[in-house]
Image (cartoon, rainbow, N blue to C red; front, side, top):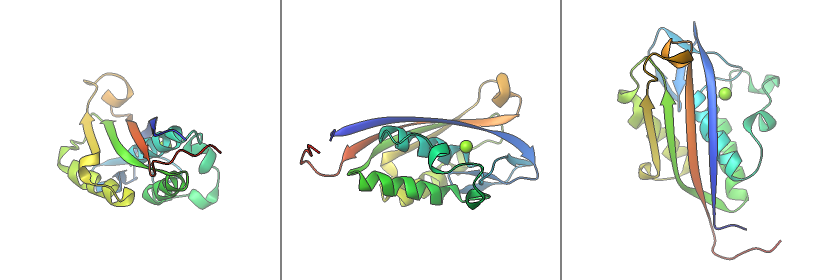
Length: 167
Ligand code: MG
C-alpha cells in the first residue's frame, strides 16, 4: 500500500436553457444550466474522477453508467459520497484537493465558499484541505462562447494508517 496517491479528473458539460446550474451542490442563479443524465454537476464529477483515479478504480462512467436509470437526475454529491466510501475502504483519506472551474459566465466567485463547505462536509475534511478556483478562457473556445463549462481537479490522498500492508 502506498503512503500517498495522486489523482486527476476532468469533465465538461454543455450549457442549455431550462436546466439548473449546480456546481459542488450549490445551485447558482443563471439563465442556463448544465445538461446531463445526472444533475450534471461538472465540478463534482471532476472531483469524483480524481478520487477514483488516485485509487486506480477507473472513472465515474464505470461506477455510475449514464445509461443507468438509477442515476437519472442524481445528486452528484451523493455519488461523490460513494467514491469517498470506496476511498476509506481502501485505507485512504483526503490530503487536499484543488479544483479549477472554467466558465465565461456567470461569475462564480461569490459561490466558491459555499462550494468548498459542501465538499469539506462530504469528505469530513477541513475547508483548508479544499481549494476551488474559477477562471475564464478569455472568450476562447467552448467555455468562452458559453457552450459549456469545464472543470479540472487534482487530489492527493494519504494512507489512513502507517502500517504497510503487503497483501
Ligand atoms: Mg460529467
